[in-house]
Structures are given as structure tokens and as C-alpha cells.
Length: 238
Image 1 (cartoon, rainbow, N blue to C red):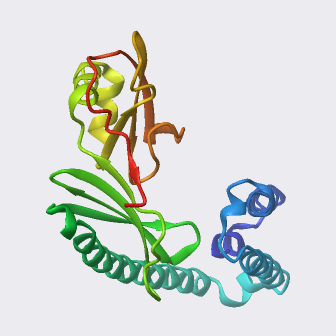
Image 2 (cartoon, rainbow, N blue to C red; image 1 turned 60 degrees about the vertical axis):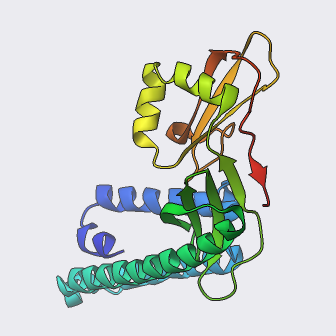
């Protein structure tokens, strides 16, 4: 908004900013991802109100009235926003460690590392992923209340035929690139009982699960079927 108010001096700039606003508004209103917004009607209402307010300030000549003060206030709001997110992230990590230790107590596991990721348009709900000596987990954390008993995902560490397939596929360039990027990689075989070939499905559990297409966050690799053994199929809801 500050950039629009300060930089829209010509018709070209006005057209660029109007196009950008229209595209973002369209995505919020009609895209499939926009349908995932929590309290969607409230967010849409706030967005439209902000657009109308910025246009109103532009018509009132805000640039001529306040000049560089607009940019200073905007940068101050950005810093305040970053500080609020840093505080929320710190709280999410703290809550995540508490919940992670509770989850693994009955399994005799030890939490090694943990990460907390924000969710779409909701600073009070976070996704936590952590790794133990036996498995990788993912679960939700709510900062302003009790963590829901919802879906807890658990992927055991690869063993048996899954480990053999992963070792064979790790020689491929695409697998090396992906494993170099992923902080919490998990794997499963598309058809554990195959006789010739199947797909080894890899994913970074911070973002998605194996077999779900999410760009660079997941990859499927063809592999020859190893000997029968453990498949590493995810255990959900544990």
C-alpha cells in the first residue's frame, strides 16, 4: 500500500498496481488455495476494506500530504509484524516440544530435532514436525488453546525393502538434490507388494506427504522391487 501511494505517479504505474491488486483479489476470492483460508469471509472483508482505504488515501492526495512519512510508518509496521511472528514462532516451538515429548513417551523414543511452520493466514495455528531415533512425526499446534487431538502422522525410519529401495535410488541425481534440500525426508513405496517395478515416493514432511504432488517438496522415483520386508507405511492417528 505504501509503495502504491508513493510510486503511482504515471498511468503506467497506476495500471501495474491496479493489475496486481486485481490478481491478488481474484486469488483470494476464487482460487482453490483461497478456499483453505480460515475465517475466509472475515479475511476477504478486511482485504477489500484495505483496498478501498488505500484508494481513498490516494484520491485524498496522501503522497502530497505526508510524503516519506508513509514509507517510515509502513517499515515500522513491517518490523512490528516480524517481531510478532518471531514471538509466535518461539511459542509454537515451545508448545511443540512439550507435545512431542508427550507423544513419544509411550514408545520409548527420544526427540532429536523439531521445527514449527506457520499455516495459511492463521498466526495462532502451526504445524510441528519432529524426528526421533525411530520415526518422523507431524502434528498441529494451537497457540491460544489446547492442541487438538487431530491427525498425528508418523513415518517409521526406513527399514527392510524400503531402506533397500531408498539406498538404490539415492544414487540418482534427483534423489540427491531432493535429500540435500529436505530437512525431514520421509519415504514409502507406492506398491509394497510389487514384483517388478514400483515408485519410491519421497517428501519433506514439513510441507507434504509422499505421493502428494507439491512441486519441489516431493518426488517419485521408479525403482526395481527389492526383496519383501518392511514397507515403512505411515501410521496415521497414533
